[in-house]
Image 1 (cartoon, rainbow, N blue to C red):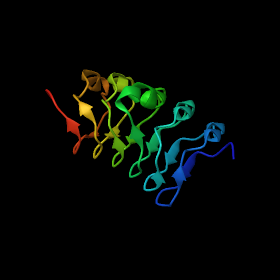
Image 2 (tube, rainbow, N blue to C red):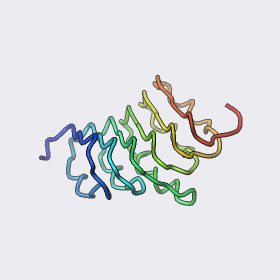
Image 3 (cartoon, rainbow, N blue to C red):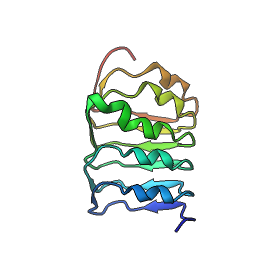
Image 4 (cartoon, rainbow, N blue to C red):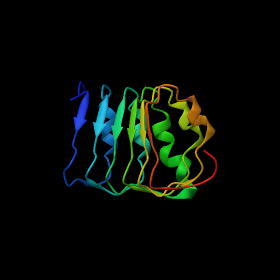
Length: 144
C-alpha cells in the first residue's frame, strides 16, 4: 500500500485517533476522514505526509485546547503542498495559527462551525492562491 495516493474513508463510524502508521503512505495526496466520529486533537504525525494536497477532517469531534493550539496545528503547517484544508464542524477552540499564511498553495480553507477565537491573522494575505475562505460560525472578533 505504499503507492496509495487517495485514502477516502468519509461517512463511516470511525472513532478514536488516526494511527501514526499512516505516515508510511509516503505517496498519499488526499486524506478524507470527514463525517466520522474522530474525537482527538489534530495528530502531529499528519505533518509527515509531505505530499498531501487535500486534507478533510470535517464533521468530526476534533478538539484543540487554546494552550496547545500551536502544537495541534503545527503539523498541518508543515504540509507545504496542501491546497485544500477542511476542518469545518469540529470543536476547535483556539486561535487561527499566525503561520497559516505559510501554506502558500491553499486554494480552499474551511474552518467554519468551530469555536475559533481571536482575530484573523494578517498572514492570511500571503495565501495568494486562495479561492475559498470559510470562517463563519466561530467566535472570531476584531478587524477584518
